[in-house]
Image 1 (cartoon, rainbow, N blue to C red):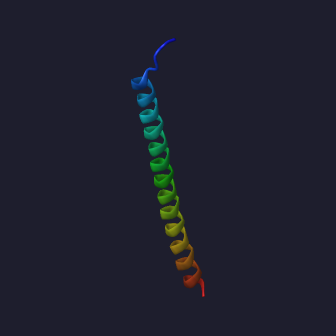
Image 2 (image 1 turned 90 degrees about the horizontal axis):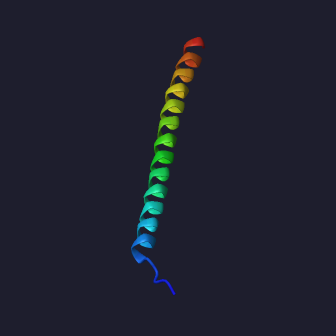
Image 3 (image 1 turned 180 degrees about the vertical axis):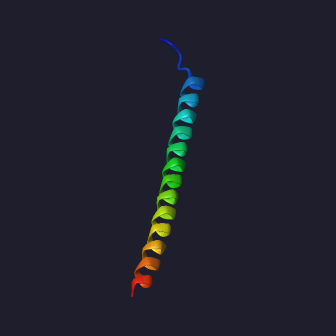
Length: 53
């Protein structure tokens, strides 16, 4: 019977954790960027709306 390669399993776990962490970071960065754009657009729209009245 072949012996288990624990180093390979450990490395695969580490790679999976890094990938998940990177995806989460990108998702947070994407959410922050979209919120910045929305807040900028929202303040511009308010300024235009208040300027028209």
